[in-house]
Image (cartoon, rainbow, N blue to C red; front, side, top):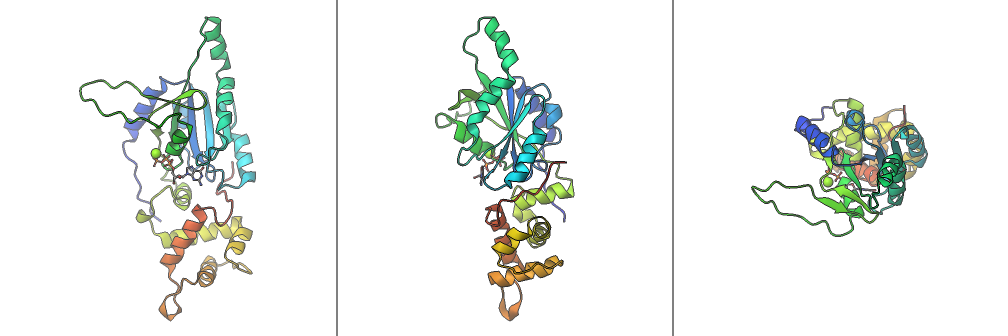
Amino acid sequence: MAINWFPGHMVKTRREIKENLKLVDTVIEIRDARIPKSSSNPEIEELCKDKPRIILLNKSDLCDKNTTRKWLNSLTKNDVRAIEVNCVKGEGLKSIKPMMEELLKEKHDRLRAKGLQNITIRAMVVGIPNVGKSSFINKMAKNNIAKTGDRPGVTKSKQWIKTKIGIELMDTPGILWPKFEDQEVGLNLAFTGAIKDEIMDIEELSLKLVERLQSTYPKQLMERYKLTELSEDTLENLDAIGKKRGTIMAGGVIDYNRLANILLDEFRGGKIGNISLENPQ
Ligand SMILES: Nc1nc2c(ncn2[C@@H]2O[C@H](COP(=O)(O)OP(=O)(O)OP(=O)(O)O)[C@@H](O)[C@H]2O)c(=O)[nH]1
Ligand SMILES: [Mg+2]
């Protein structure tokens, strides 16, 4: 399936992020907990190599907790930490500050030795589209984020967003791009809704989703659609789901388009269950 999704401006974005990194102490990288690899940017390591980083596996309400635990272990190393969060409810966000203080301890000790008392931690938020960057910033912001109008001719200095936990966030998140030329990555992004449905064949996508779920989460799939058994043949399973859901047109033909919308909506809304689409390694 061809996914025609090209983010553009990649070089410019990379340069901007590099410039902005000079202004912060740490990076907060947001990923989708259901697809921690597909929702990451392959160049992030290189881009952020000189900064401590906290990876937020967001949408923890939708992922498979067991898989997420493995991810958290595999992502934590050197000056990188990982936690699971829910940016809609604000769950998990409290541990960010202590983690940052631990990562920045040496630097802060040095500054304190020089007599500095009030040390502000500044962070930049990065992530691919749809992972929850705006939700995170809104949840963390102390006051309503003030929109400042453009002032032509005046060099705009960076705006900082004060947060409830006492760190400051750069007002514009760095939007990265996934490795979308990889078929598997493209599919994972499409399943989770990170790629707009309008540019894809959703009927084929729903078939691929059933194929994936019947092998990785058969129980959840059967329970949700009240199937007594699963076939090896994905199309048979899709048809069975269609019949259970009554997406039948005149003449008994299955309305695959309607069925695809139902399946994708229910998957994305977590109705089929807590499901992760990727394992570490
Ligand atoms: N279930 C669930 N949905 C979430 C969570 N965090 C964000 N979302 C949803 O994910 C969608 C994308 O969130 P945004 O905050 O707009 O993501 P973004 O990274 O700013 O996206 P772009 O601005 O397009 O790059 C929205 O529909 C959010 O409501 C979460 O923890 N759980
Ligand atoms: Mg946003």
